Length: 338
Ligand code: 5MM
Image (cartoon, rainbow, N blue to C red; front, side, top):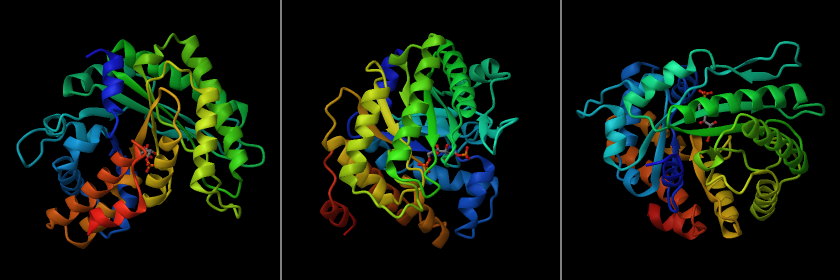
């Protein structure tokens, strides 16, 4: 498969991406919330239960892994990437080394990990990865994101994407404008538009072939502490408008992050976006919390009850699969669980 075919397969209608690339520190937080010890065997167990569920075949086009996970052998026999491929989903890998404080900035970050990346990519390819992910993070305040953060992160994202294509893998470009704060939806629109504009400017400078990329953006949404709530219709309208104005048409797939939305909000908003999608972009999900929250709760209740954990995951994956086609509804949400 060429890069364009891989990107389209990751975001195929009815399917999306499972972001299971929590670093050890992030999964520690998730496990703490369910009173599970953050041990390698527990991390493997939770993840292999998800990767071995029936929803993988029908609703998941790709899975983003963390360095530790791509090297693991499951207790079921195959390695983690083999288990994912058995469901016809594509294994991918997070290759950034995290968001680090940007020198001279006012509490903003730049994502690091370019040193030695060319060599690491060769190793990940051998493990079976066919796509990668790099996440830049931007905060909204009265004065932020600054042009320093917007420019430095776009530059790093573009250099990352160019290296990944050289290694014959599809780069997911993830510029995440955080929803933390009391800003309104218009402020989110403005910040996201500026961030996307600069990302595509740098990607062009670095000669990245956009047909072989996937964008993983935030939705256009009010800050989590904003008093003016927005309807899903408004979120969908503003999100699609922002994408149409700032994402080149040659990008084949756009897979949203859930960013702290509840599971239902993430499904509902994606569904509204697809209901009005009049572009050629394949618009879908690349959710971490939006796909895993209920399954994680079940895992916390009883780690041996594989059936219940998979039931929760299968349901969320199915609901988001419907949202990727604009066919989700609150009634189906209830029916499918009954
Ligand atoms: C799954 O979480 C990912 C890893 O985060 P860290 O590198 O901070 O450990 C994260 O990048 C994720 O892929 C995106 O933020 C989307 O996840 P959500 O939970 O926002 O859908």
